[in-house]
Amino acid sequence: MTQAYLSIGSNIDRDRNIRSAMAELRARWPGAAFSTIYETAAVGFAGEDFYNLVATFRAEEPLDAVLATLREIEHGHGRRRSASKFSARTLDLDLLLWGDTVLDGDPVTLPRQEILKFDFVLAPLAELAPQGRHPERDETFRQLWAEFDGTPAIRRAVALEA
Image (cartoon, rainbow, N blue to C red; front, side, top):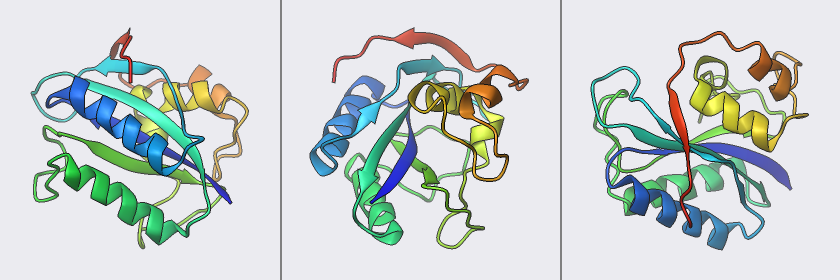
């Protein structure tokens, strides 16, 4: 079994889409755990604020099957991959970590570069896995969060019942 971490985001009908995504992830991987949900500013474009969080679960399936499941969940929430990278999203599920795997772009880049770039990814990851180690930096996520010097996007924590 492999420990997976993924970021979750939505800024279109975000309450419904985040709740629904959490429910689907729990149904697919019953031990799934979730960080605090954060309201964050849109990054890279002018748009409505996002809800962002990180989830973790243990997967028995291979990486390609998990990626396919995540894409199916996104598609079921109206996500269309033809939009630009920085744009409004019904649902965005990005695999951040797959155990200690390091991959460069095929079928995914791991660990995701966003871990070190965005507070709305690193803060909830450090919450869920404070002693987890970045596979390339060999620092804990708690250490990386304490040293984070990027542009803040987090506005507030959100209480959202799933």
